[in-house]
Image 1: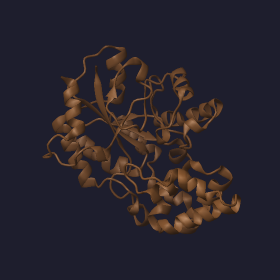
Image 2: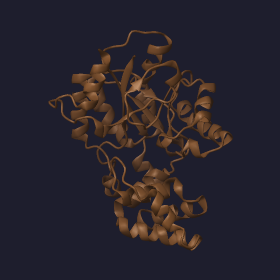
Image 3: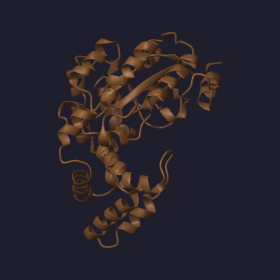
Image 4: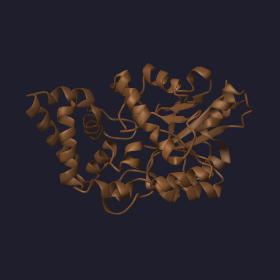
Length: 323
């Protein structure tokens, strides 16, 4: 059984000034320490190498690990890339097409910004009021289903995220997010997008430096909530990133937005020649031909952030599976 560790990152260091400094992410020094830990206990490889190890029966290095960076944040080019270059570590970057090319702020980032500046209890009240204005008494059902803690967030934060990300009907959710973002964060979406996301030139520079550029999404919506036809549109839109970066679409790699996919998603990616696709399910990746389009990833918080730290449970499990 061939296994690999895939790690998922988002924001590394404060992404800018003001509101952006409040976004949840990994501190720059902690990231550098984690890279040192990874170099001590793993062999960093490219994401495409996982497919080659299976389909081309290539020999794999000991305890392989892949670093992946979602959404295309500016800090990936300006902070992450220099640290990786100094350490000689390859990585895969997954910009979102609408953020990179259209300079719109992703819904997930609008929600993060809203949570960064607002009192969460006041947000809950405001959201439930909007729900009950649309359908009297409906907020109780949403609270019962979604008011639950996750691996990293308390229940009230999960509740706000899930409702504003996907759980509410679009007629309520979309105008509510826009109102909250405009009144609490900023009315200048383009300026925030320019601060938050990489430019096309920076993505091209990463590709020239030997990093892998993958497709993540067009609008960063959950594929599993879309019809097959709409999934095809979303995936095709996501591939605009590869064209902009000047990289080949042959055996491309893909990251599912919010880790959401279904059988249609896998079939559509396979039809387009995708070699590897990653989710957000926390586990080590078992490499076999049937599972390459739905590989799990650990979160950055699942690994230590110091080279001197002894191997943790995930590292010990990875090492055990290499034996």
